[in-house]
Length: 444
Picture 1: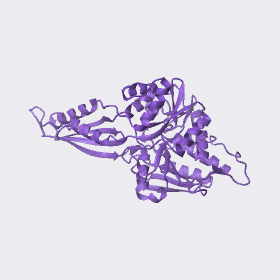
Picture 2: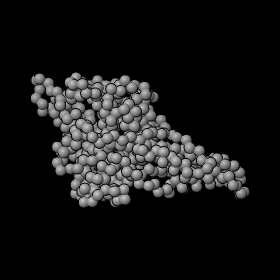
Picture 3: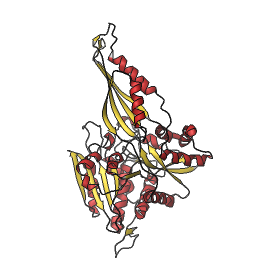
Picture 4: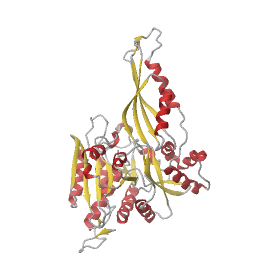
């Protein structure tokens, strides 16, 4: 439910999708590239822009900086009716870098072509930032203030693990967030088409993250001589074994629900044995969903030596490991077994998985808001292969979901656009998402 002013009709000035496209374009034009090494421009300009947009409709926000330029925004809005705890709605302001020469358009142009808004962050995740700001501004102007208090949080550094954004807020400004019991964030609510049916995927779980540096040490020497303690050889063997390992299928409660929904559309039953076949029904999205029915560990970087005829003392590799809720011990035991003796492990980032039961009033509100705009659709939970700021907010005990609704064309390979070249989002999907999110705020 929501509150309206005494002198203004409910629908006056209320167009939740009215600004969403332009706000998305403007946010894309603010370069917030996060290189993970403090060389980027930071998020201050984007946070200041968002604060100005909120201030224009009477919503005061606070900017917090973990380091100069690494800026996050927190604002509170609504509430005052009933005794429900606040709902956290969060997005991030940073984006991964983009190599302009690889793109058809300038990745920071926010151009509109062929019915899409193009640019880095169009789907990850300035689209949802724009939806949230458009909906909140429209509702504030029209006096449609939610009875449940909303905590709006736009963070820095999510693309490098959130340590200078969400983690900083949780650890240093806990009082801003600690009373929230539920959270809504990115990478959920988007559609995939299976046998002609649109299935909207709501994120209800995430794999854990282990970014690791593996180091092998040996005996330095001349490259022309026999050396049985070659660090490069030892490391290469470990990396090859890890990269080639076939991890077994493991189904979590979230994925059991999703696969049952897919099986119903396909006219079969879901089992661990046909899980991979059911995942294939998602087409291009199977590259992501195929990674959430098993643990994964991908070698991503190698480093050793300084001259061709010198055997180095040390060789290193970086591994991007992701592990399912409930399977962390199995993951690390297997990884160490594959690496073998003489390999040291160092964590660059180690974050726990999470899984929220797919039930309750918030799930019902998300489902109803999608059905209202797309009757006949299917709504189901899924487990995300990557990580979001929810990992940090879950440390405060919040039930978390990903819900950034988008109705997408059946032939769009959407998951390939995350961190990809020519990232873009359909204009009508942005407008759809704003309308759905507006309905959702009416229902919380």
